[in-house]
Length: 254
Image 1 (spheres, rainbow, N blue to C red):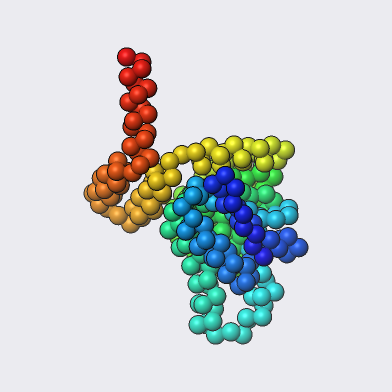
Image 2: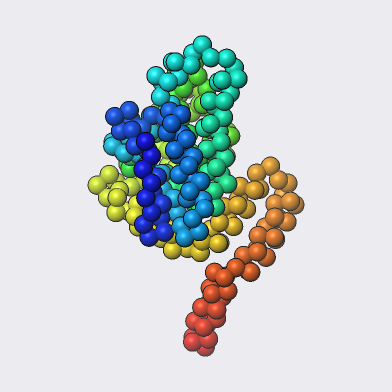
């Protein structure tokens, strides 16, 4: 259900249930968690891409599976919900930037999975939305991430109305990072990812950790965290090489 490959320091995790629009079920979530764990342990990686096989990114939870648990108790439902929440935590604490490459539809839990990524790049024809409210459900775990991505009022509107929006609309409200024409999507995605992978791995990892570590901090505490991150960055091999290269370039100009 999950395909995993690595090339040129880039790991690709593909949701592989195209006949079900890559709907999430417990088995797929277990395999996704394992793929994320595997990529986190690979020090040679620079970027992780999550995408969907076929014409859609992900349609959300497998409703057939949800229907079978309709008579389950509250603890069973908590355990099921926590499986996705744990994946969101894995992604948040992953040392590499995780990018969602979205074609087609990213809906409900599928939109939640994309939102949980650090970056989202989408085809112009892609659509995003959290339509759970239409069946009396709540897109609960992703709320913690969505309200950090867009304004509070826009987050509430998306969650409470179940509105499906286009990729350009999602970009306009700050939900996604880049929108590329369908015909050029593959080439422009590769350019974007290759450029990201060329950056210092240690610097990007420290930046990601610092940014998310600041959640809930006071201004003073956030500045102090920045001081420590700055000091750590200066001690990395990447920084030493970068400073040496910059010094040589400056010396040549003078």
